Length: 123
Image (tube, rainbow, N blue to C red; front, side, top):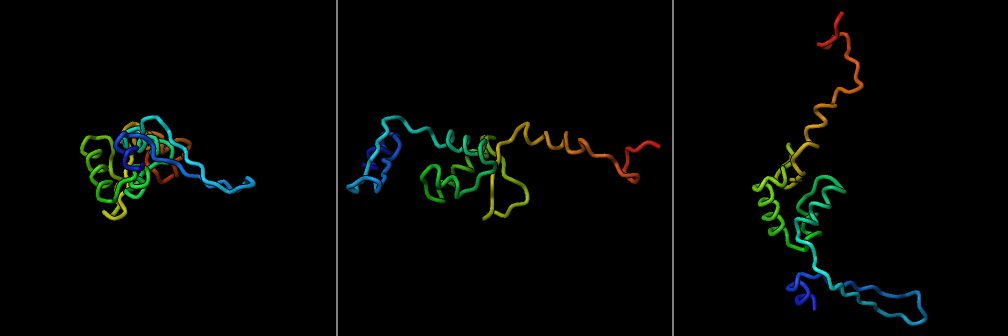
């Protein structure tokens, strides 16, 4: 069943054990709607949670580490993601490039009064 649903690009079956009824049982939910492409899910995850790592992609897209690495590399090559600077290869994480990256630089000094030794303080 899992293979057939994956081949049809559907969500995998969801299993739930029912313990709150007089008779224990298992409920299976099958969603007859197309699962969004991996990029849609990853993009949404980044917007809600911030930078993403290989393990997150594995979990979201239900792929192994090698496949997740290839997906991340392809998204970086296309300009959809940018690696976070200063991270080792094993600790790599990615973010979406764009205006959000530039805003901290523009607003970094907002509300900050320069110290007497700092340039920009006029006497």
